[in-house]
Length: 70
Image (cartoon, rainbow, N blue to C red; front, side, top):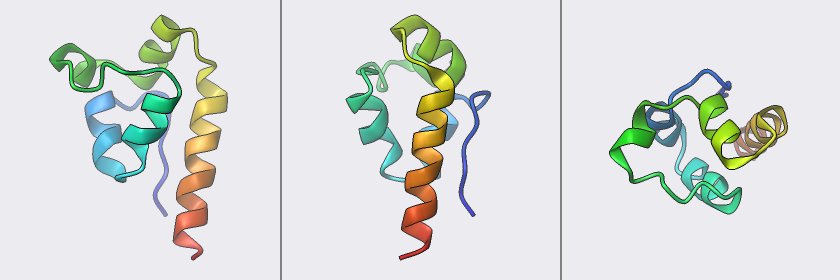
């Protein structure tokens, strides 16, 4: 099963599944293409953007689980 956690780097996250970049962009992280963001953890990125990281992680993992159950 695919899943993510808040310690994963943005560069890792966007390789887990093709839906993750869209989810992050909708959450307000519009800097995914920036080289510096690739080495930033999801938790760090959430802190910078004022996003509740646990809520975002749970939401992404729910979407990944739903995709696998199709």
